[in-house]
Length: 497
Ligand code: FAD
Ligand code: SF4
Image: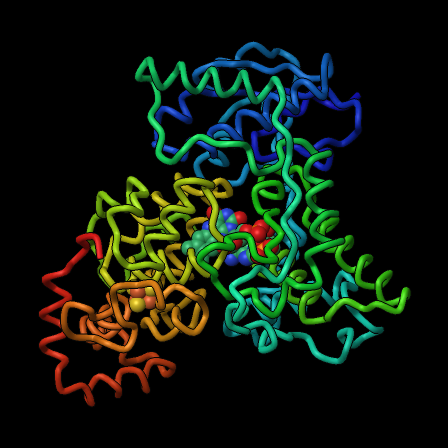
């Protein structure tokens, strides 16, 4: 008979069990919430998902509500097994714990062995996401036409950079939303009580639960996305609209990261939807289908593998020597303290929902922190706590690596720093902003435009060896007012823009 399987709160789907009737151990540890100030809706989501899983399994599962993992594990004389957990610290813990059988990680498309074989491949000098993604597509036969990529090209990203729709409306219909039940009510009551007792403290608003907590809900969200939104996913993937925060994004990251959906099943479902639509004579745009598949089996897996590949010290990387603390208005998600229309709106969304899509994360929040020299580890912690889909493995690589360039370019070849012109092109924010994206000096100088030049000047020497930064750095020498811009931005610092 199968051993009892301990499943962590991000291992809640059936693919973390060896058989549908395998006995399960679930541990709810209040200490996890007490250690950090999470977004209220993130705490709700995780607790609700764990308790829904326990309810769904009935007698098959033991749910222990304890302070530490050890308190629960100490109750078992029988052997217990666990799929390798997703963080360095929890992996250390399970490996140290005597009598616990630790299996390979699940919940990703490629195994760690497959990644290692690819990374050690002949002639591989750089570990590029694009190469990894193509290798995985070939290996698994995803969106392939024999040995060739479907449609003849591997990557249609260049078709996915259209600006925000000019009419200010979302290119996709409203997503499907879950309905709360009595377990959510209980979770809400518990969180209220713990907070009132001073045991935990949260950021962000409480609100109607927006993300799936059961496999059934996750499958409903997946199929709603595939049916009504996948076709529009690609073109406006990078766009932002003030009144339309979901656009055509899938809103699936929390469900996949909780383990409710297996990412390979998501990829297969997207491909099946596309092939069925083509057979019906109503093909979905390939740039949308390929773009979505690349996010799930390319980017998500690559970020996961790089978290392990770059080692446990990766989180401490600080190539640009950024040491500013996270400012109070950002820590509190206080959009009302901020005049800059883009940043204010994104903070408001984050406070209300615990989620914003990729470009506000990278080009509004991350870009601000990068330009202002905020400590990358502090930003990683902030992102981890305030996003409903944030976990250590996904935040370290996305924030330290991709967004803050603290790894000196292991993940992204150049820093994701951009001035207001980028935000103006990709959104409808600037029209309603007291700042002017074209101005770098004066009271109405856009904090992103001025911040961009000040950032380049501050890091001129550190970035000089980067080929892709040559032209932007040359641009610095043409700015006659550069000393004034630098002085102005030093005075602005990280006070709310
Ligand atoms: P879609 O746009 O619909 O994309 C589909 C799926 O692709 C996502 O659900 C996700 O599973 C996957 N995906 C795409 N890009 C990435 C990526 N870079 N890393 C991991 N998965 C990816 N994603 C998280 O899941 N958790 C995080 O904590 C997280 N933090 C981020 C922090 C920063 C600074 C940045 C720049 C990105 C971060 N991302 C994170 C990646 C990405 O922004 C989110 O996965 C995405 O916005 C989630 O919304 P969605 O499900 O609608 O995604
Ligand atoms: Fe953001 Fe600058 Fe545009 Fe204002 S002008 S919305 S601060 S990019």
